Amino acid sequence: MTTPGISFEFFPPKTLEASFRLWDCVQTLAPLDPTFVSVTYGAGGTTRKLTHEAVTALEKTTDLKVAAHLTCVDASRTETLQIADDYAKSGVKHIVALRGDAPKGQDKFIAHPEGFAHSIELIEALKARGDIFLSVGAYPEKHPEAADFSADIAYLKRKFDAGADQAITQFFFEAETFLRFRDACADAGIDKPILPGILPIENWKGARRFAQSCGTAIPQVLDDAFANAAKNGSSDLLATAVATELCDGLLCEGVEHLHFYTLNKPELTRDVCHALGITPRARLQNVA
Image (cartoon, rainbow, N blue to C red; front, side, top):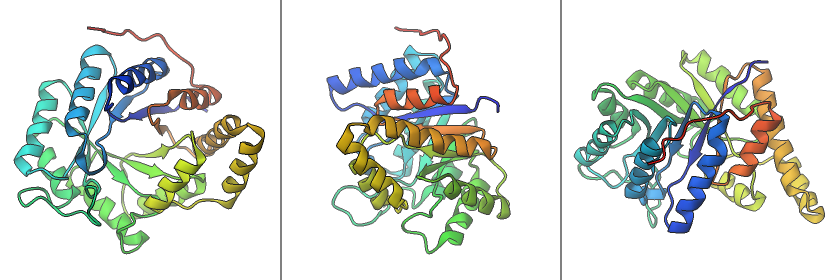
């Protein structure tokens, strides 16, 4: 089995302490030689400025290839495209283009009066800017707002037709979930890369709440296993084993790239990568 490509998602820090934590996370995972790293927006676009600061700092101070999340939330078209242009001037030409979640206090996404109505409009506008590599979101168990699984696959196809270069999936707990989704995408004529999103389970209760909110199926076996592990203090060992088994199952079925949601806590992701045979390499840091 060849060594897979990997990438890592970080979220922007909101405090000085969190800034140090992000830097420690980057320093821990950078030697694993990721293809790229991405930095998210907060829910409802609440960390737009912080995301920009984190992205540009990583671009300037490391040799990592950095992707910036960009959403349609609470901004006009002009403002959104200006952010993309500012990234390009900073050397960041990989955008993760998303519609985004509704701001706090809203039950559903409502487009800005002068903004993009959905992700496809954003993708088309970004692609028209020229030299931008576009990643988009995908949902192996369908988006919570989609009518059904087939409609969600069709919508993903429209994203690729609009100019997306690759997709990154929401996390899932069983390899078969992604593999069925991959087959359905192929049947729909999607032939561009789809990267499975992997969430190493740092905290089962938190992961479970997140899964419920985004429609991710929760296997009973994990509920039972983490309940038992909590009693005997083996939660970390179990989390490493669960994530490693999931990734190994994907790699055995021909998956070539794994995208890890790190939650800015690098140790578990690092341990899973090591278990998969992904070993550190020396990287040159261009610290300012």
